[in-house]
Image 1 (cartoon, one colour):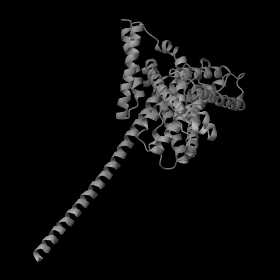
Image 2 (cartoon, helix red, strand yellow; image 1 turned 180 degrees about the vertical axis):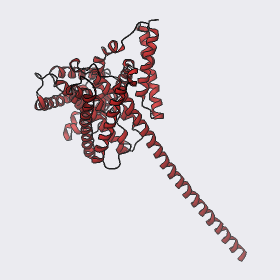
Image 3 (cartoon, helix red, strand yellow; image 1 turned 180 degrees about the horizontal axis):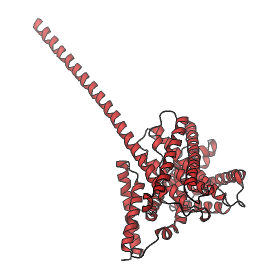
Length: 439
């Protein structure tokens, strides 16, 4: 049986997407991240394929070749989806700045400590390569966090949306900045990076305004994939000229989701608000759906490429546990400084996920370390996801207990009021009888 034939691949891909949708349903009911289920599915498929294919298959080499294109599209969709979630309002300025500061400090500090751990415990690991491997392990996963925090109070939910979004975007920028550092002749340093960033922002704003003005006038119904094609084109051209291309995607998402900010006062006359709203909602659906598919196949592919035996390595376990411990230690300090004592369950909501896997596959060959075990990625992803699951379940039980207590108090109060009303009614009846007897 040829499980890699075109028809069988279509069947297998369809089943994977259906199972991923089912996993999302299970995740909402149990708070277990669907990511874990997708990774387990990938591991199961790995051993199933080895059973049907008698010849030894190197899934790592076979599958990672197709990840470059899919990974690029995935990054663009994740950043665009995150940008569409960000609402720029005056009363949100302080929470946004605070979330950005927490995300940046947490990212850099976690990457620095993780890089030191990798440098000390992995032979042949250079400090430059250690930073590249540590950065993906230090980025929060908005793809996991945003769907998981819907049950939290609004201020905590908004904090996690902002923090994870900024962590994704800044982590990706930091990763590619480190990659530029591998080529000293092309690397222009911090000053060059700042100039590049400023130029990218200017180009991104001009392009975003132009796209909004043009696309609101297009009458054809099939224009959203044209819009996606334009964004992909801008990203690729930006990459060709060594610009921070993801900033273009981020700013476009911010412009389309916050037109009241970018078209203030009389400039709003240039907008067809109904069409812009329609483009925003349809674009939001496309990015959500695309991110869902990308996330599904990436985690399944990650499971397919994982060497399960590496999880039982003492060195892998030691490195992973040290990195996980450092993540929460750093997070505790940062949250206490910026937020105060009310840091639960925020402290434990720090899963690693899709961006971690995407950037791991994007590490250049000249920075790759043969002794690095991919099991470290799996260990950290599973570990942080399980900690988040535990924290969310505990918080949910706490809220349920509080609500039950409130319900009991209300019920007792109602019963007391009913008893008092009954006594008053009896007293009235007695008075009525006494009056009747007196007459």
